[in-house]
Amino acid sequence: MLVLTRKRNQSIIIGDNIEITIVDIHGEQVKLGITAPRTIPVHRKEVYEEIQRENLLAAQRATTPPKLENLGDIFKK
Image (cartoon, rainbow, N blue to C red; front, side, top):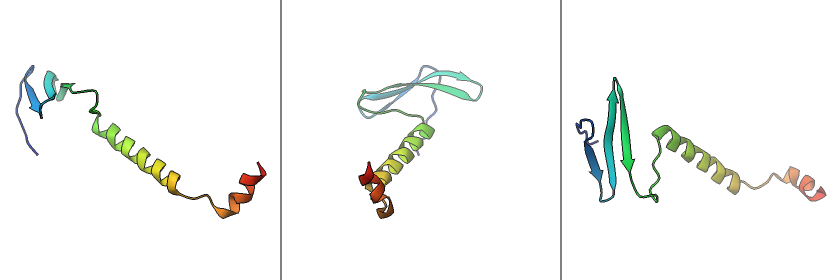
């Protein structure tokens, strides 16, 4: 992990097209401004992890065949 010290209104650059700016510091909270191309998703970590969990569950549901005991119910409809 790279650890950098920045002050308000200072930035770091990631690659050629992502800029992270310290917008405000208030107590133990830091507000970050992120400039990135629209093609690069930017999420808080907890949101990203939830998206990954939901994607995994959806993939599991899509690849799980229906139970044979329920097959008759499907054809009755």
